[in-house]
Every structure is written in structure tokens, then in C-alpha cells.
Length: 238
Image (tube, rainbow, N blue to C red; front, top):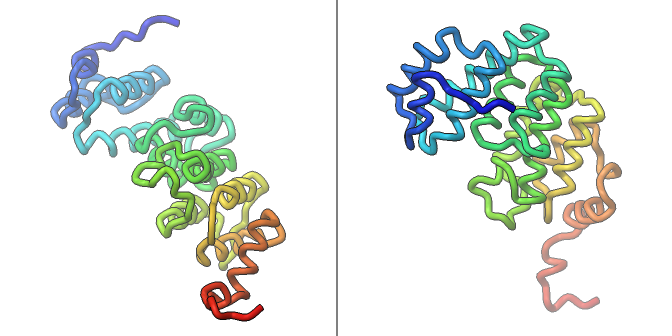
């Protein structure tokens, strides 16, 4: 593989600790005057993102919007996404199924928003980021979460609903096997009581208690049918 060579001004900016708003203006004018148009442009964007430890606030939106425009509108099939686009995204932006950064995760979510219906592979990849955070304590969704925290928060459920919003119709989630399997991987990574909002989401997807592990089904049954006083009353006679 040939060594990456950046032209001016990218070569100068790549050597700085901080990419500023002025640097971004130079990049837009000289390096990407027509936006991201080729795989080489993608490589330059990723190199700048990696080599500059600090970035101005404007960089995040530019990174996400420019790369999303390239993937959706300049890659085949123009204006939509297919399985090959999903495979390319995973090869470029993920490492063994884990998206490398919060910025690249936002790119993935933006792609799902821009070109519905998104391929099942992209939907599953986005859902698996939550399963990985819960089960292994890795990935961009681990940020701000304690390593031992394996509970679903309201933000986690909102994240899943955002990914699946295009599949929602009249209170039902119409999903393929790949997306349903990803939901089950999330459920399998949860420890303890699952929120009712999560159980409702699974029901909308047609995933009932019998689809879950025996341990989870038993836990749900105990929680729903046995009052707390059963466990807390020390004077209870067997």
C-alpha cells in the first residue's frame, strides 16, 4: 500500500493538535471544494479526524453531513443504500463490528435517517452498538456509562426507537429476522429488571416472553406477579 500523502492545506492541518474553524474553511475551499467525491477524499477526512486530537465544534457536523452525502448520493445506487453500502460502511468505520467513535456512530444514524428503508445490515449494526456497550463495555455508547452498568436507560430505549422508527406502523414494528435478532442480543445483554418501555418495544416487534431466555422469562414473571412485600416482610411465615 502506498504511503498516504496529503496536499495543502490538509498536510499542514494534519500536523496540528487542534483543527480550528479557520482550518475547516480552508479545507472546504481547497481540499474539498465540491464536497467528498471519492474514496480518496474519504481517506483524507478520516486521516484528519484521527491525526488532530482536538477539533472545533463545527467539525462534527461537517464530518457527518459530508460523508453521509457521499455515501447516499455519490455511491451506487445513488439516492439510496443497499447491502454493499452497509458492508463498505462496516469495513471502513467499524472494527470487528464496533463503530470506532461517537462521530462515526452519528454518521451511521444519519445514514439510517436519510435513506429509508435502510438495509437490515445497517440497522443491525446500529442496534449491536448498544448490545456491545451493555455486554462488553465497549464502543461509543459506552461513553458516560459505568463499565458494570448493564441496565437499559430511557436514552437507550430512545436510541433503539430512533433506529427503528421507519419500521413503525400503527403501533407495530415490522422487522426482518436480522433486526429481530439484534433486539434479542440487546435483551440478552441486560442484567436485572427490564423497563416496561423495553418490554412494550419487544411486544411491538412481535417478540414475546417465550422468545427470551428461560431465566429472563422467569425474572419477568416473578416481577409482575409477586409483590415486593413478599421479599421484604421478615415476619412472613412460610
